[in-house]
Length: 472
Image 1 (tube, rainbow, N blue to C red):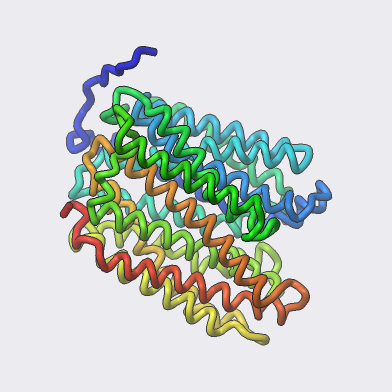
Image 2 (cartoon, rainbow, N blue to C red):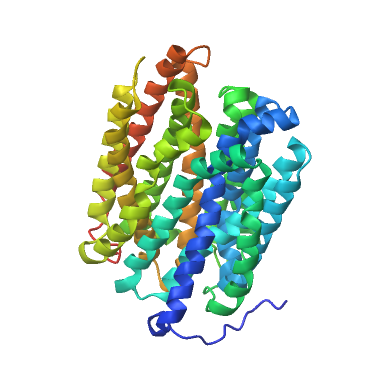
């Protein structure tokens, strides 16, 4: 392939026909649904995997971590590939890889094969998810983008919400393999639609920044590997400290290369001097650190602490994580009118308040009725932040760099989630354990206080955002 790419003429986003926009929202939403669903859907199937494979605790953890780790480390690469070779084309490639990884996961005959297949899924998701947001940004003018991103945020929230319920229902009613088989027909149906209904677009860089891709992937791998391995190896172990050191060195080298050496940098560092871009990305990191750290504890609280089955637990958690499906589209539309800052700020305050109330209620004898209101408050808060952050990030850069912005945002989201789970697990083991219900509750409450604190810090960061993402 030649070093330069002739970018074909295309219809400007503001002039795309309404049917084309509808297809863009539908396909982008379904792509986001698949990616977000598989972050959490496996969690309720872990007992069945242990029984079928005789898997160790480490094997079970890696069925989740393998997906998240590859997802986090390659998402910048996925966004760059879309900019270089075409967003529609790479969306189709990412969807095909994700579907293939899903089928391989369902056919896995042991924990090693399943972990490998989950890595393939993560690689597909790393290409697919950032491009869903870029395709929406390309299809809609800025003044109408909030509604579409709100729908995208609601569908993304549906993936998180449906994960525990779907995983529990499928595992109890069919088998754990069907968690992955369900992705295959949906992926196969979406492939021809994506190839024909989406509008092709490209980024502004005629060459891939190969040095930047390698340094970014290596740096993010080191930073993500450390918290993933810390619960087993210990935060002070040589493995974890070495991973952190490698990650920091590679990220520093990446930033230096992008600033001084890259002819076509994959990440223009000047964007971080824009308050809208830098604050929204910091909020995304803290939001997902808080959210996934809390989800890690709450899914266990409902089963270990309250005695519910996986399906019963998933249904009861819906009062929390189904809120984005209801609230996010409305919040996205209102953000077009009032700006993104109020929704990020108020949303994070509500998330912190709900999780703090939840932590305060946790004690021996706690009932589900006592937890409903805190879960609803936290869910409404999350619903307000999801679309606001996405809109702020993509609106704070030129339209041609929407893919870069989405890639950075997704990388920081996933890293935030990895660190959030690691910190929640560390706090839990410091104060409690799995020896008894009382011991679990002793550890769960402090872990949720930490998740609430992360959301509170995010609210402070959001207060410094410009009133509107477009006000650079």
